[in-house]
Amino acid sequence: DVKVTQSSRYLVKRTGEKVFLECVQDMDHENMFWYRQDPGLGLRLIYFSYDVKMKEKGDIPEGYSVSREKKERFSLILESASTNQTSMYLCASSMRDSSYNLPLHFGNGTRLTVT
Amino acid sequence: KNQVEQSPQSLIILEGKNCTLQCNYTVSPFSNLRWYKQDTGRGPVSLTIMTFSENTKSNGRYTATLDADTKQSSLHITASQLSDSASYICVVSAYASGGGADGLTFGKGTHLIIQP
Image (tube, rainbow over all chains, first blue to last red; front, side, top):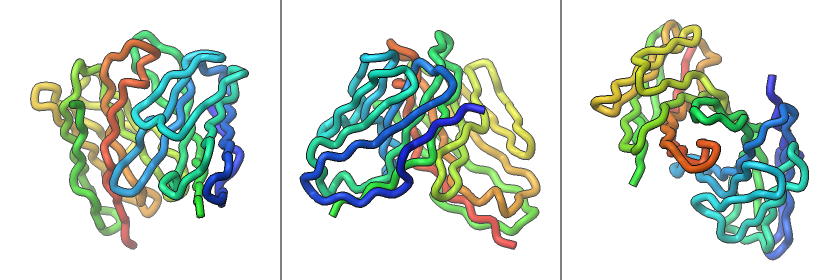
């Protein structure tokens, strides 16, 4: 079974802090993704990566950056945390597939609270 | 703009009963439709993926249908169990330039509660 592990289940940070969310997958997947999930809004794509050192902006990249130095690890960085970044953050991975028919495998999320 | 609408927003049924969740979409060009189950405090888990040519797909007590002409899908749960209590998310994939998954449009989910 694919395992996607997010380093923290719960985080509480102060406004203005730099925050690192870490995600590791163990199935040699090429694709990795960061989403945030808010009540009433569903999942929204922040950033994704198709390969080491590659990154692409998703729908809501403002205030975030990412790092993918190794294939198995994808980090989300909040440069200066703000209260509107309080959310559930979900990491996901998938194999690269030309048919686009493979599922995403999600981690269990990090619930971040910015005070 | 690509959109996925799910109904109802929430649903409460008694254990053992059947239920059907709906998903309507306007996504182009259509690649596939996925249903995910998300337990409280956990990440979503894939239930089914259906391509344009597939009308029905089952995964145990879960059966998904797809009508590509009307752009509608449903997820039918048979003989519900307490463990079915979760959010069910419909996700539609459009062909995209990269690995594909960046072309996903997520519905907001249906929150299902199974009562004993």
